[in-house]
Length: 360
Image (tube, rainbow, N blue to C red):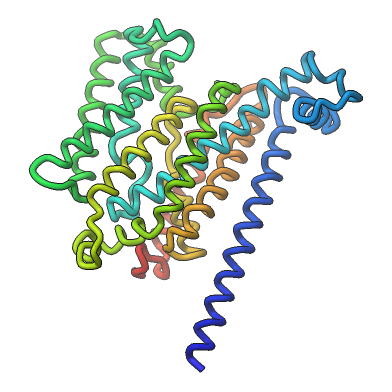
């Protein structure tokens, strides 16, 4: 009887997971199709979808939409922005899942290694001192990407000094590097005394998808999808990380090299996200917790569900940023924090929720 009950429970859970997966995938498709219709330009649904259908299928009867103002608004501005929101939301959500497993800390997010501070320092150098100006219009984003990557590699190197990196050493190294980068960023802003530059730095650190274009989408989306699939194949090791290094070694798996590889892969994803959209917090912190509450801590289910939910979440946050203020745009990092902070506080006070299978 007990075996039958267990089997029925497994089948029930599997059916719920499959339903949720299909439902979130369908909602993501709907989000893409719906979000592309929002914007300051007043366009009809027929115009919006005619442009997309013509560009994808080259339907002759819709050839009038091959160029012009409507074509430019839909194909060059709105659709790349929606797809970039999808890619960035997916990257931050999955990185949040992975980082929380790596450092065994439910408060970890994609920026736990000081990546956001490193990116901000790189952007500050580009804006305030003109470093990287030879890179052209993407100089700020590229300098931020370089800063994020150098910071993450520095944290990994420091954490591995004097022995193998542990979750505690990674967190402490990340905090130290973050403090150093923040201090240097503030120092540069102070000595340059450029109010306009300081304002631009502040806006950049608030995050925005306004700079979306097809070249950024063509980089961000493939990188994100490949990394998400790779992490999905590693769900067993991620599950082991929740149990700790001692337990994993007892089970015959040394997680040190896996942890380093996952950190590098996560840093690449976050680095590209920072390059494309600036610093957007709380997505990688709240989304994994929401999915854990509903579907448990198994990374085989946690990763794909977080990827789909995070994508849809950021798409609709970006839509809200475009429509809340008339003839203006709210920084997406501000809106996400306004939504994410109360949600996270609610999760913290829930007594029925725990991390790694333990309830508090």
